[in-house]
Length: 396
Image (cartoon, rainbow, N blue to C red; front, side, top):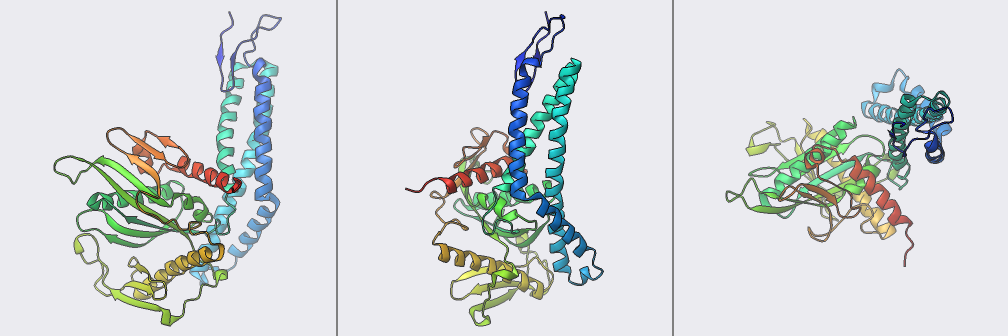
């Protein structure tokens, strides 16, 4: 009896006339079908990314990065090198996938010709890995919104739930910062307002990589936590909420100008948990836009001038969103609004069972610890695909 072989595509054995068994012969057609499907998907990705244009852009940025006076303007240099690194990564990923896809086809042909079971299994493992990698890259091509290519400003606020909500807001901040760290995305913490007992009232940080806004914008909305409260001496179950807001970073081409007479600036001393002084000078800045009532603050930088500049960037980003909403009359296009119950997008249940579930996409996992440690790519990818389906759906 020929030994059955388990593959990623089928389970079968086929005796040959000579008596040997080629377990993968009958699945060769299936292998070819999957290979053709992945090739079609990769061709679509290459077309959307415009690989030739991408190569030209990388070459131009590499030339600019080699300029001897590049670092005379540190902020501009960091932006250029960050964009170059991201585009180089895009180009490298698509070129490597094309090379691997070509190689796996040849590997499988060799396995069939040589009656090599081990090589066939290796080819099918590689095909499965390629499917996952191509699916992930395909998500990147779905980010085609007006501001999707921008860096992101993320603000997390505690909502209903008292001290548990403040603690949950801090858990979410850590989750997103760990996600960025896992992906090697640089971040900059701009402001943290600590709660009195535990956790945070709010925090704002930047994710400084291209397409951070398009990627993270599907995370905005109200997040819900259910658990046994560590702050309840009776050990009761508590439901709490935290809100996530994601904004695109303003660029010079946006022309978001704010007259000085429309801004009120207050300075105060930066402080950390428990009121301990972080800074002996009044360097923290609170900026109020008088016409809209929008208030932002920044206390992470060491000087008042730096904090003022950072607060102004956040204020400009929020005003950009307001302008976009007015122009397109899509009040929730860039910035979600709503009550704790009315705008829920994800639940994190730690008791009586373990489950994280997205309420829009139905994406879920029982590994709550991994999610809260930043393993949220599957949720983000599902959210991006869901958003594209919503945009493509016919309106009634």
